[in-house]
Length: 390
Ligand code: ATP
Image (tube, rainbow, N blue to C red; front, side, top):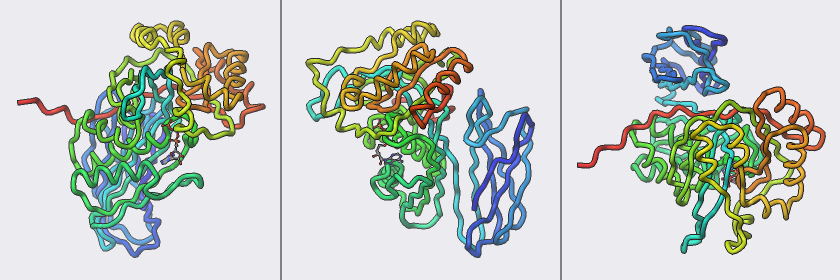
């Protein structure tokens, strides 16, 4: 069974289409609730679709309180739409939701010291961009296993998948035993320094928090996320932030001033642990993260470009010189600044105008196959407020 947003352009209704695609004999009714978010949050009442038979398609529309530009999962300034549906019928009950999992970029990355347990202390500024995976999470209303599928041939489908780990962690922490299907539509390059796995894991945490009505606040989800990977706490919120600690201290920053980002992923994969092992704390030339934070707070585009820095770039580019080459080429084609994200090898360049960004991307396409022109995005989240201490 698949549910799709079927409206395009500016409308005051949400169109939907539900396909009973499975080979199953399932028939019954679907209750669909559509959640719409942008500057404010509203939720439409669940609708009950007509009788649902094997191999049928049901479509319809739900009126919205105001005009919107809809987009499933949301991006490019459109209104963010999440679908949740409950099926009741002969094939069993289930609920499903679709989460957008945006890629992250490190506008700055520094590690001031090493903790005794071997983990790094981080001092970084992260933002998210509208290059995203889409993660559908379906709970089946009966006890069973967690099943992960993806449309990418490169990813593990078992306990090694970070999305699986997130589901397993939440289920064991809150004593849930329901069978679950997670499907990841992969768009973020793998092992690229763009936090794809972490963002998928964070999407599963958000999805299950809603489907199971756990009402966990952001801090609790971040603490859980940290058990999976240092980038998961940031990805839970996916809004520009200053991130410190082991990755769990998130200080939200204002939205970035208008800018376009060119992303180039060379045809190599970098293992994060292999780069982190090579950090020599006596030699690291630390970044001025505070200047970047202040520039973002002032919305000063030029200052932001001046303060972008990643202290791991020399380590990765020593192993893969193509990283430095890409940085140089980006600036040569007109980017205001270029830097590596995470442990690499992805390099991003920042431009004020879309036309300039497109020019940079065209220039790079000759020697780098994977190039994207994107904009920063902020995910709209609606976590429960932390409970007041008594
Ligand atoms: P980070 O900078 O957080 O280490 P990355 O962007 O460099 O992440 P990912 O794309 O998250 O890299 O992949 C890192 C490793 O995690 C890969 O070896 C991959 O096989 C594994 N992995 C597990 N689950 C996922 C997932 N859902 N998506 C991507 N990679 C995953």
